[in-house]
Figure 1 (cartoon, rainbow, N blue to C red):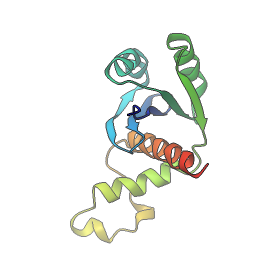
Figure 2: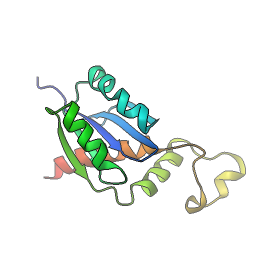
Figure 3: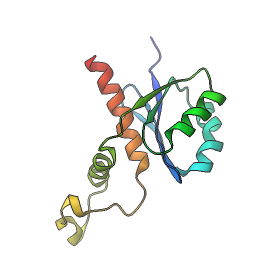
Figure 4: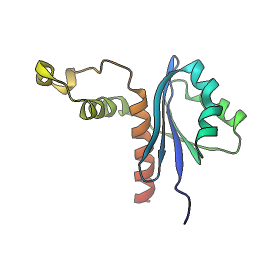
Length: 138
């Protein structure tokens, strides 16, 4: 039986990064929002903990620096750049699906809601999901 493909999806930023480790069955293995500096130092740990086949890297802020670091430290890993357009809006919607507002907050329209925490990890999950869904439709 072939091994399930596992990707590390990254929503890059200058101060923080969101990442998610997702397999081809869309099973979420890990997700986190972490400072940029800690993300760079924890990359080796992420690669040691999971059998990553590919990096899915959003083409937004600061992606070139992350891409260069991964190519230098992990030259055997393929990196696929993906369009991040509208990913923050989609992640905001997903956040409120996962954590529905309670009380009077549920009457506030989605377009006016802002999650009370960083949700760059959810952006990364969506990037991974889009990657696997696009593979099916090819």
